[in-house]
Image (cartoon, rainbow, N blue to C red; front, side, top):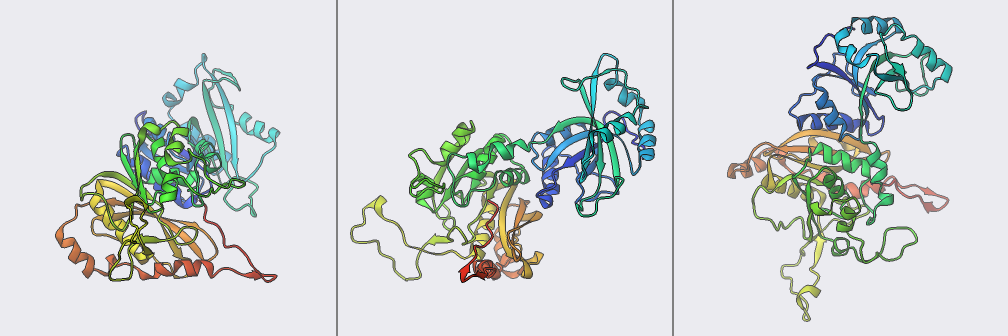
Length: 465
């Protein structure tokens, strides 16, 4: 159990939040990749565990991750661990004294916190556990309010609330380094947002998407289905310049009926720019345009460092594109430029994803990432249903459950090669790159879960947006 390492290479402990569990590993890996650091852990690593040991990193690497993550609560320099108090003591006594010494000096104050996962301890039991650490060579004074260093004893009682063991499954002790950015979930809550819509993305998921995309300062980020701009708000928080398009004129311009309760119409200053102004990032707002995602308005250049988006599924937002099934479309006789609204038609999900991947292959910079949501019908889902492209490499695929029979997958892809003429032939010949038509019936399958109670239909589960 000994942790032998020099100052430049130590073992660190992440304490992770136990929500959005499927999204945690890709987020931490993406944040480490921003510093060109690998994800290295112990042989006993369990992805679903709330505690992860990370190796081969510097303290600055950990602090960088914690300055962005919304999936991790806290990070520690791990001094010792074990399955029992005896193993923990042995591990701590084997930890190099020279690594401990700078934080235990007589002129420094400290305090020790006790954290238990999946179990609540009485105050007196916590004190007993702290007293059991009296073999550590602390020379400073205890200060509970304004202290120089914080240490933590962390106990893992498993993840089953219906089967809590008497003794912890594992115990850790270490020096606290930093907390994650869980506060962003509250401060950026959609409830506090100036401009929202029926499908405004949940703040926590917005930041997770920005982290999966590796968005960083001075990047140019694009959302082709921008809606009310929740994803742009999250990306701008990390210093990226943001832009987007949407086919819905009213949403882009912030006009029409309001989505808030007890508010009939949107106010004059309800728009995406106002949302960024609310959070002090208006200077990073490039612009948003009314545009059809199926008819790209951009030159075929590598423009964007990341594309982060939530395409419409046809549940609470329509899937439409400009065009008509008729052979000839004529504008009305009274056509007068801006007053003309083009004819629209259905935009199938399979076409949406094919267009999105093709657009990303042409407009992402090399190494840029595409992050988007893919809705699926769970009884039929398999990994082969995830759309692929010859120029894009699949990085991660995470699930968020919507109902008993539907979910959506957060797909992260990275551009690994520039498009070539031969890719078009490969795209047609290789079945892995063909569009999965089954996505087109997602709306019908989503509503197939409706049940009638007392002669009335119950509402379908809402997306977590």
